[in-house]
Length: 357
Ligand SMILES: NC(=O)c1ccc[n+]([C@@H]2O[C@H](COP(=O)([O-])OP(=O)(O)OC[C@H]3O[C@@H](n4cnc5c(N)ncnc54)[C@H](O)[C@@H]3O)[C@@H](O)[C@H]2O)c1
Image (tube, rainbow, N blue to C red; front, side, top):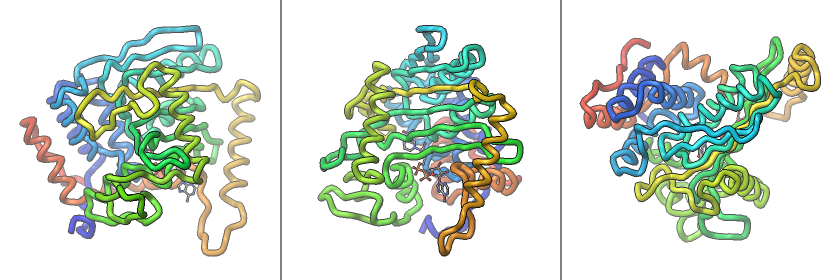
């Protein structure tokens, strides 16, 4: 069974080159291929395999079905000195979000804050890569998106809201890690169910209900039902919040209107909401860093509950995974490698390199 096989380790640079080559063969520009590949490989590096390079097959299926334009470029309109709008023109979500955050950062460098709304976009994978784009520029950030219906509203029983991740970040102190929160408002991200299906694994019984409204550990049955919100009505309200900021505000689809990345019937029309904030608006940068260091230390050195070996700062587990995978390679199962190579074959490009870790 795929889920029990020994993993095959791939060097991140080989994964990056493989995805870039496939995307270029599918008509994506060099620049955008690099942006998409970087976002996907970074997810695999951080252990967020639900949003890694295995997403390529579904993205390319949407290109082949004519519902995602691989060649288009996102465009930008400046609304006020600190507000801009990006139109993704139904291309890949990654370049639209990248342009949005790059613009937000540039505005924040001059004015302290930059806010960008993105419309007519697509799935952009793991939100944390956009938080990372801001952190690399020394910025705090908010990264919101809406997504296709998967979650009932509290008290409801059918899919309406997206499992839309809420992400934000702040640079760390001299000796502490940055703060990176990236979480779906459901008990687990739906991509984790697709990953379990791909790998022939079961899922925990509290993640989803099947089509009859019963808890299930079978990923295929879970995908026919609904995801469960985290914290009951609070998770459901956070999903609605993502739709207000990313959908209603942007002019993109909302209220259950976004088309999912595995649905080949029509364009995604996803909306995003991106904010970059300079961390030294109210205290000096040195003081901010020092205060982040204090917060980090207080959190990770907090008294531990019975059975807990270590307390982590948000995003820290993923950063530790990234450090290890940069050294040792990214683990994939054979079925995943086969699926990726099948995509490469369709486009007449070489398969993924498995040696060299
Ligand atoms: N683009 C989309 O439409 C979409 C939709 C859903 C999810 N996603 C992505 O799916 C990914 C997974 O989401 P998720 O909600 O399953 O994430 P998760 O539950 O694995 O992690 C959520 C957050 O909790 C933190 N965390 C987890 N365990 C911790 C611990 N022991 N101590 C301290 N902090 C801890 C993580 O660092 C992270 O910030 C995210 O990257 C998200 O962006 C994307």
